[in-house]
Each structure stands twice: as C-alpha cells, then as structure tokens.
Image (cartoon, rainbow, N blue to C red; front, side):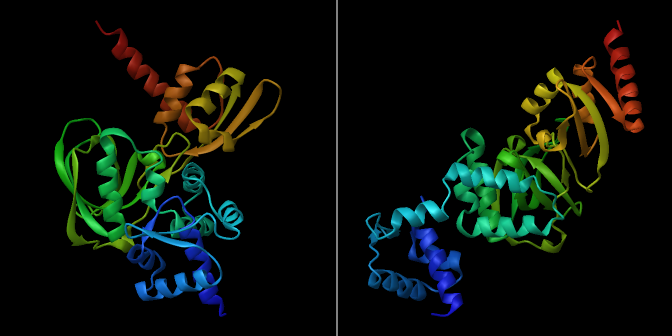
Amino acid sequence: MDQPKLERLLRLIMLLTANTYYTVEELAERMETSPRSIYRYLDTFKSAGFVIYKESGYIRMGKESPFFKDISQLIHFSEEEAYMIHQVIEGIDNNNLIKQNLKRKLASVYNHKIIANSVIKGKDADNIRRIIEAYDQKKQVVLHNYSSAHGQTVADRRVEPFAFTTNYVEAWCYEPASGRNKLFKISRIDSVEVTSEDWQQEAMHQQGFTDISRMSSYDGSKYPIQLKLNRRAYNLLIEEFPLAERDTRQISYELWILDTEVSNYIGPTRFILGLAADIQIIKSSELKEYIREYALKHIKNLLQE
C-alpha cells in the first residue's frame, strides 16, 4: 500500500473514532477527496474486520471493531483536551513555524466547531458559530450593530474573520474599509450575517501580538517589563492571568520575577497599582513613567469636588 493512501486511511480512522459523526460528504470534504473514495476506504475497513455503521446518513466505526479502544485512546483527545491544546498553541508566538504546523494538524481532525462547542454558551453562541461558518468558507461577514470599545459608536462592520482569541472572546478580522487587522469583541456584536462575498485580502490576514493579560496590539508592538513579586502578588497574578506562569521564575521562598512583554502598559499599570506594596518594578523606565502619569491623572480626578 502506498504511503499517501495509508495516511488517508489513518486519518479516516481518526475521524470515524471521534466523538462527532460525519456524513460521507462531510468526510470527503474534510479529507479533500471524493465521496466515491470514502466508500472505497470504508470497504477496505470492512474487509479488515472493522464494523462500520451508517445511521441517519452519519458514518461511525463500531466500538466492537478490533483494536477500537486502543486506536481511540492512542490518537484521540476528548473535546476538553482538544480545546486545552488549542489554548496552549494560541499562546505560542505567531512567528513560530511549529505553531502553524500544530494548528493545521489539530484542525485536520478537530475543527473549530468541535472545539468551540466545548466553551461557547449563551447569547454569543450563534454569533460565534456564524463567524466559524464564514471562516470555514472564507466568506466576509457583516457584524451588525457593533458597539465600539467605549460605546461611543454603534455601526455595521464588514470584515473577513480569520482567527479567534482564547475562549472565543474576540475574533481577529481584516476590515477592508480601514485596511487593517482588528480584534472584535464577540459580546459587542448584535448579530452576524454571513455574506456571499469571498475574502478579498487573505494575504493581509495577520494576528497581532497578544500578551499574558490577553490584551493585543494590532501592529505587533511589544514592550518588555520585569517585575519582582512577593507571594501574594504572584498568586493573584497567576489567578488573574494564567499565561503569566510561563514567564515567571522563583528566586527565593517568597519572591518571584516576572519577565515578559506586553502590548501596552494599561493592564500592568492597573495590576501594579492595586498591589503597590507587593510589587517592585525592576526594569522599564517607560512603565514607571506611565504609572506616574496615570496615577497623577486619576488621583486628581478622584479628588476633584
């Protein structure tokens, strides 16, 4: 048996032993082949002793098939495990080629719809699913009645969605009108309309830098900071920003160093001011100056009669 065919058969096994069922047409689409080829592969499995069921048009491999349990446990993750892997991968720098390979391999079996169903609930679920639909079809969408960050404007925004942040809180989209990649918060979208228009600027799609506080810079700007934290500050940091754990190291029983890059100083400033007695800024004169101006401005406003 030639290697490409063997790879396709193994991939089909992965799909057939997943928690999600597919029709022959859906299997063909995911494997980029024809329904006729899928039927041939299914016949190959049957001749090898595997039990194949077709119920209401959906194909699955019977658990009584030989080695089913071993295969399923070896090559599959639960939906929650797949989602966690997706989270970890998204935390890797976008310039890392391994990240792109991992995302492609994960997506080959666990598509956005499966992973998203593990986390999206409530009123935003329909909007997220429509954005995923547009992403899969490479279509533009209209975000109806999108409220700006400060709530000053509400308008329809036509965009090309191409990625999500962790937990599907925001979507990275290219906006043709401005010619920029932007983050759109899902909770600020009234409704999503998938249009018939294909993506026009796929080559322009690029995620900006997202820091440990999940704040992003559209142009990829990064600002290094280094903080010394006592146990209280460290514990609160990890609770509020779990990704910070990868950039901290313990230097004594009661002290930790956070050495990281941020997209802007807003998040660190708010955190530091809330724990001023527990944190020391080791490096970054720019951060010190930003905190000084921020504190003076807000204290002045606070004390105004």
